[in-house]
Image (cartoon, rainbow, N blue to C red):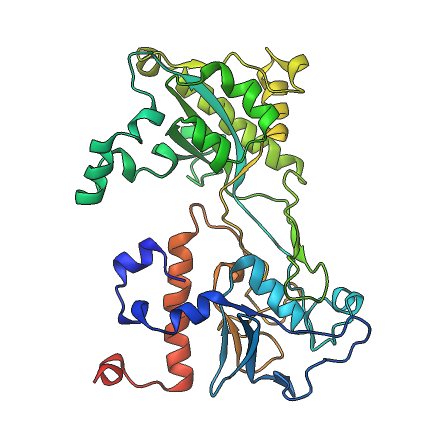
Length: 386
């Protein structure tokens, strides 16, 4: 998959390759009989004597076998890399046996799921300020972005400022951020469709501010102590996996998010913002009526009522010391006890970074490419292009 950031910095002739539609439309997986532990494919085994030999994909209903001459590189993301490994017999033994999948390697695949998540406060603004919902519809703003990649349309979700802070503030000599604050101009479309806030909550919180200018401050925990998991729903590759992120499963995580929400309120009520009409929404979250007026209780209720993920999931195919029973990969990103199989994506991170995961994931790809070239003795890039 090609994302905008990587394509901007890494323009490549392969983006126009006729093979790209094949990859994007194909569904990888390993099929098993629903009644037995016998693999229903008799023609070819994809892991033989603990060595990965290839993959099978479903392309428009047709089975396509891809045989690896060197290595199999799995880069399906934090959720689907774990899913595909388990479908291939690499994962927790009890989980695989439950779905009648032959166990190839008993490894903690799908465990250690982590994410940046939290909740937000909303602030109204002076009626003299043009609402963000109107800005993003203006033809002049649209053309400014198309022609020069500038202006209001360059802001994702209307975000204009980000802060990395901690509960001790300037008194923390370690300077290790605990939460991240996002400040963004608000629009009904964003909170309803992008943040996927359910209709009853959206109506109660935002309906009174329809067509009015507002902004939001989102508090995200950076290093949650709780750990979730990804597991299989069945042995059918087309069944989506079961995901339990275990948000707020550790009490300290809620405390950090609430601390960030308090900082949002402090900033939102500062003199410079008050001058432009900044004022906390007066609407009350459904179910939090009894806590209104008490920030400690109310912010906890709000955080539990509406939880917003940054989609920064990592950790389900953890790399690290091969002797550590919690790891799936060695430091070279190779699946333990399996030859010729690597995983290269955000799932390999043992812990969340103190920021967004896009660039760290790109750097994992950079480092992996160097390790792979060294291992398989590839020709240089210049020789490949001659």
